[in-house]
Each structure stands twice: as C-alpha cells, then as structure tokens.
Image 1: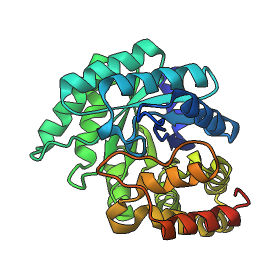
Image 2: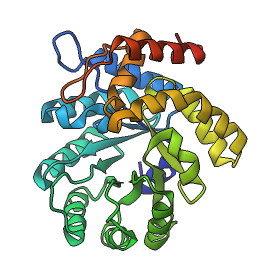
Image 3: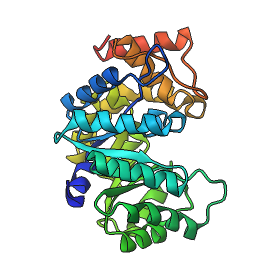
Image 4: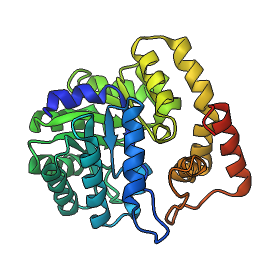
Amino acid sequence: MTHERLRDALAGVVAITVSPFGTDGDLDEKAYATLVERLLAGGVGVVTPNGNTSEFYTLSPAETERAVDVTVRTVGSRAAVLCGVGHDVATATTAARYAQRAGAAGIMIHQPVHPYVSLAGWVDYHRAIADAVPDLGVVLYVRNPRIGGAQIAALGQACGNLAGVKYAVPDPVRFACVARDAGLDRVTWVAGLAELSAPGYFAVGARGFTSGLANVAPELSVRMHTALSTADSAAAMAVWELVRPFEELRAADESAGNVSVVKEALAQLGLCQRDVRPPSTVLDPAQRARIGAILASWDLS
C-alpha cells in the first residue's frame, strides 16, 4: 500500500483492536482473528493492533508481534493494517521493522511516555523511528497539547512517509490551530478521541476517527463516519446519542474502564473473555448489567 493510499484509508474509521486473552492468560489468536473479521465485515478500513485499547503497555514484544501477524494474515488486502509501536527508540524501531516485514501498511507511533519531553526531542524521537522504515506510512499519536503545528510540519518536511496524525488532545480549538499551522492538507487528520468527540473535530478539519467501539458494533461507527463525511449532522448525532452511554462508561474515572467496557460487551456477545491485565480491572456486576442494557438497545444482545 502506498503512503497516499494509506492517507486515503485514514479518512475513515480507524479501529483499535482489543487483545483477547485465553484461560491461560495468553493471547487468544483464534478469538482475535474472529474480532478482526467482524471489523472487516462491518466496513472498517483501517485495523490497528497494539493500540491503547489493545492494552499495548501490558503486552510483551512477542505478543505484539503475534498480534501483527494475525492481523496482517486475517486482513490480507481488504483493509490497511496500522501497527502501534512505542517505548524507547530502539524498541519502537524494532517493532516498526517487524511490522514492515509482516506486510503492514504503516505504523502508529505512541505518544512518548518519558517524563521529560522537549519539543525538539519529540521531533527527534519520531524522526528516528520514521527514518528506519521509509517504505511504511507513519501516523503520529499526539496526546500532548504542547506539540504544535511547527513540530508536525518539521517532521513532515523531514519524513516523506508521514501519512497522518491521530490527534487526541481534548480541545477542538487547539486541534484546529495545530492542523492549520502544520498544514491541513499535508496529512490526514484523525480525531483520536473516538465517536463522542468526532463531530466537533470533523467540523474543523478531521477526516477520520479512531474507535474501540467498532470492536463491538462496527456498523455504528461506520454509519457515523458516513454521516460526518457527507455533512449529515442529524444522522451523525443520531448515532452519537446511541453510543453515548457506552462511551461515557469508557471515559468515566479518567478512562479506567476504556478497555474493560469493550471486553465486557464482547464477552456478553460470546466473542472473547472479559479478562484484562493490571492496571485495568474487570467491571463490577452493576456495570456489567449496564453494558447488557446498552447492547439490548442496539439489538445486539
């Protein structure tokens, strides 16, 4: 897949997969492949293993590689595979090169977790990883409001494989400014805070959005994107109202249940176990009942 084709694919639903675990606590590859197939059947155009909804920071390097392998093998040519990479430069570069050998279309570089990040150092970090895989498209994952258009523009000028930016700062005004300072048409801008934030970000320049909900109900995510991309605000907000209870559960308590809510829904649908790894926890019985009611409202239970 060319960088241009990846840019086009990013102007859609960018699904972040969960990592289903078996009874032994290991990655359940069969369940994972089934979940990826559901995403494809639902019309999702970009599948992202090893994102935050994948419990990236709890996975071993071997597990992230297995997730890449299963994703690429299952997806084939039906969608773009965008693999999450991160940690230190050497680890991220090794993972990026693995994704390239496996046949992925691109990598999403997680926001650096180092406690001391200079703006110049942020550019250097991403450039080192992008330069290691010039044939792969690169998507930046921006969660730090200090990162501005100047830093993203500098990367775009230095790295011809910069394809998109997943912008996850909860501030549409800041996003609008950063996108325009970096170049609105330089890359594909992806709203990185899922469905509830997507309408506001689309109004000021986003063309795609990320989704964990898509694991559960891909048709709802795709329906929202279709409405947003055709400026049908009434249809978009109709989906927004449907998914709001689910997404608010995920966002509660500083997003403590971000993954747990999705896995609980999938468990109730018989698609994978509800197990999550610390520091996440499974939901309590009252929360599980709320998930069941939401699924019933979507005619999925």
